[in-house]
Image (cartoon, rainbow, N blue to C red; front, side):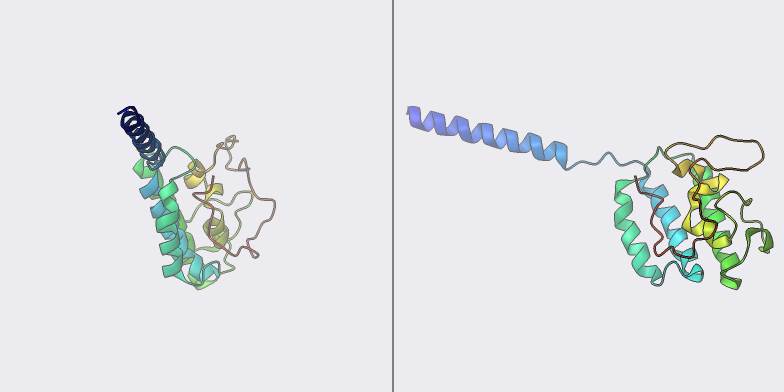
Length: 171
């Protein structure tokens, strides 16, 4: 009987441990999954005329799953995400006429030019540099009042060597 009791206790302990470990490790604490998907869907579509994305459907499928990790930062209000998506979409529309279009030459207002953002396609490649999407940065930039420097701005002015649209959800 002692062997049976010992075996039962061992099996019960193993089952309980397995249950506790798998229950806590299979969950997700991701925040901003839908917001990430909205932003990345806009980037995938706007990335096509910029030459950043060649297969929009594949890009959307990738980010549908990748965004299960959520945003690297706490998601802002829905209005802020909507404004960010609108800026990315406007940049894509501007680039559809001319992928080398400067922000100041776009027919519709995209966003204000800033360090790292001169071309419409710069907004698609680095939306976190646009004032409307600054919440994508881990650390928001210091506001200089004039819309100048972004805190973690890229040192290059153009995104000619960008080959992917990844970035909004990295972290």
